[in-house]
Image 1 (spheres, rainbow, N blue to C red):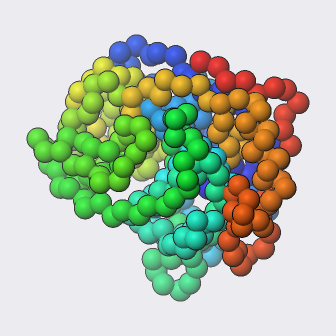
Image 2 (cartoon, rainbow, N blue to C red):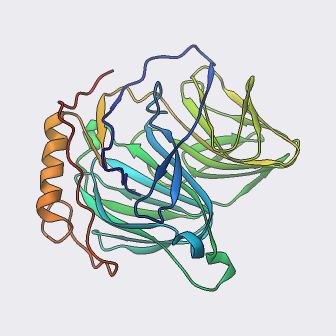
Length: 331
């Protein structure tokens, strides 16, 4: 997914320490995903006061959206650098094409992980049709920042279908990293560049689910639907609870209607980055250079930094203008 804002904010990442075990609830802001009939997404990362959770640096949550009414997701070819995109759907389907040659369909409960590394371009378009499973689009798009040592890796794409693990009071699907579930470790085989946790947790009505987590990690709980008790905080649908390091057990408590959440985690990133539009860099110059290269290529140069692929829907997305200030990493 791309940031389609005409004047995207400069985001400086490198959050300060929070009190051990503290819980902070972040409210989403609505962002249009382009066009007069734009699908709107709810963005909770980056946010003021909290720009990363481990290496997770971007969280968009969208739907349920009737594809026939809105057109669903239509994001033409756009670039990325030094990050990974994580696509996770609850319903609907999205067609993914990228300049590594991958043409895949994103389906509910399946991880699609694209590593941008030194540079890649891709598109995301809702799959349409009369089939019932195509009528409603609902899911999340997440970004993971790559550490400096791996920021220039070759672009690649991975797909994984985790097996849901039943727990007392619900079920858990771990798509990245590992999580302690009823005394056992549920783990994804997908390798990551920093320690990460990514999991979907479905809670039965009025259930309490206890999960074993890494004490050194910070965590985020994105509530898809329902109300969830996280520590002493009541977290509503579309809100993101941030939990500072310092706990080895995480308890989630659902209300009368049950709930579904995405659980994210990882150790504090420990590096400064600048994130602007679809680029991550370590300096103003890196971001400027990436923008200039994309504007020169616009997804039409197979030998260029971002490559090219056949996109049947039209032209690529041009980059917006840079702000009239120097982009600075801060920590």
